[in-house]
Length: 390
Picture 1 (cartoon, rainbow, N blue to C red):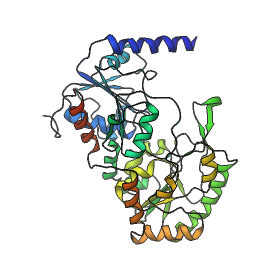
Picture 2: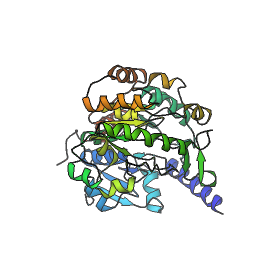
Picture 3: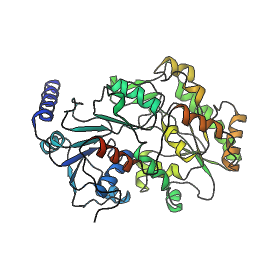
Picture 4: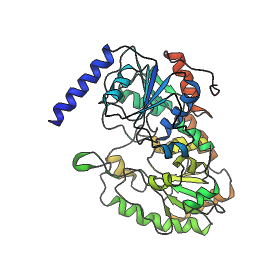
C-alpha cells in the first residue's frame, strides 16, 4: 500500500511540475533542517529576493534565532513538506533549492529551476539514488564533474560557486560557546571528523557498509585513542565529531566527543566551531575540501584505506596521491602534525596549494551571494543587489 501511495504522489508531483503555472516565489529545504548550505541560502535570499521564500520543514524559531535568521520575517512562509500546500509551492516555484532532493526527485520542468545545493564535495564514490535537478552546486571542478555525471546533470550546469556554508567559517564561535561545549578557549584544539564505515540509516535492514573490512571501527577508535595522547602532550585538545550516520559512537578517552544535538544546544553550528579550530584530522570525508578555505593544517588518518577501496571506493581513484596534508599512521606522524598546529609553521602549504589546483577547488567569502548572482544570470531569478533590502 505504501508503495502505491508513493507512486501516486510521485506521479502527481511530476505532473504538477509540468502543467501548473510558475509563481513568484522560491522554495528551500534542507536535511537536516539547519544544514549549513540551506541556512546561508535562506539568509542571502532574505536580503535579496523580493518575493516569498517558502521554507519546507524549517528549523524551529529558537534555532533560527540562534542562527541569526528572523523567524517572523514577512517574506518567509513556513510549510510542512508533507502537506498539499507544500507540494503546490514546490510545483509552482520559480526556483527550488534543496540538499537531498524532494518529493521522489522528479524530472525538472524547463520552466522551473531546481538547484541541488548538495552537502559536500569529496572523494567517496557516488552511490545511492539519482537526484535530478537543473543545476548542481559544487566547490570543485573535479568532484563536481563526477557528481554531475552520476546525477545526470549537464556538465555546463555545475555551478562552481563554492558551498554557501563556507561563510560560517568566517564567524567562529566565541569563548563562552567553547566553554559550553567543554572546550578550553585558552588552548588550541583540533577536530577529528571521520566519515562512517558502517552507517545506521535508511538502508537495507536499517544500515549499510562502505567497507569490506571487519571490526574497522573498533580498530580505528583504539588506535586513535593512542594518538590523542600524543596531541595532548603538545597542549592540543582533541574534539571528535562523528558523522551523523556513523554507527560507532567514537567514544575516545581524553577527547571531547560532540554530536549535532550538543552543538545545536550550544546555539552554534559545526562550521562556526571549525572556524575556531587549529586544524582537522579526517579521511575520505568531504570536510577537507571545505576546510581548505581556512588554509590551516589538515591531517589524514585512514589506516583502513585498502578495505575502504575494496568497498565503496574513491573517485578519482588517485585522490590519495593529491591530498592537502600528510597521512598519519604512527605516533611520530601525529607529533609532526601537532607541531604544525602549535607553531603555525606551514610545513604542508605546498600540499594544500597543490590540492586546490588539482581538484579545481573554488571558494568565496560570500558563496551564497555568488550562487544567487549566477542563478540570476542563468535563470529568471529576480534579485536586489548584494545589500540588505530596505
